[in-house]
Image (spheres, each protein chain N blue to C red):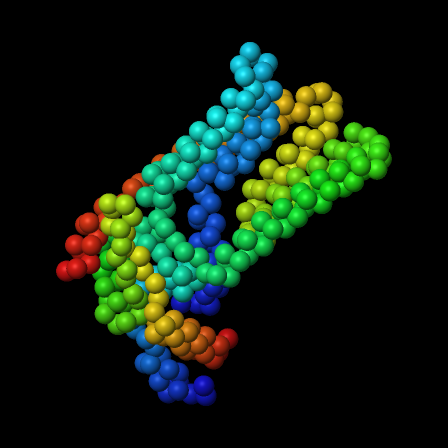
Length: 106
Length: 206
């Protein structure tokens, strides 16, 4: 990127859904595993249950996360995994952010 | 989560290490080494040594129940990537291989009537112990296994000096199991059971 305008254009194109810190934390964890339940995600991200649910809703609405509801015995178990679209979106986001940081002057 | 460069390998490693904070690994390992000495201890107090098998089986069931009903509701469940699962499998194969090599050497020496002497015998077993603990410590990033491996390897000469493998293995196993119990207590204290899934399902549905 050669100009402030170029940098601004890249920054404007950043996926704001993933860019939000709490959701970025969730997406990063789900990117490095195949699936995880809400309890594991809560422990890894430090989010409260309510916060986690809220962010997961947004990610699911965007098609980045798939939520599977099953039962472990009689107890409901909710697990989440990144969809292919979610993985691709995170890869694109990461590439854009690396580009932004690489081009920042010292 | 910082927007600076995200080290995905580090994130995955921390997620994997988080699943080993409950102390159950130490308890399983401690149980194995306690098992080596349990028959002898039971005999020495006038109980049938065969009871050790029943006690070991009960202990395994107890550890399984601890994981299912105490640990997992607090830790959560995770399915790691195929790459991670393969790495864990390969480490276990390497551990098995090191023990096969150790016992192979001892077997061949026995068959050929090669008098190895206590020093060599204990050195071979100590080497297998070290491999069994240091391989996962290095490849799976479980640093505390370096200490346990060194503890057991150093315990080998003690068997010769004390004159009792039962006592040494039991002591080493007991120490590891105790470390596991301390870890479990700390884990339970630091990880309360989260709200029930029903509440989550309801929140999510809104």
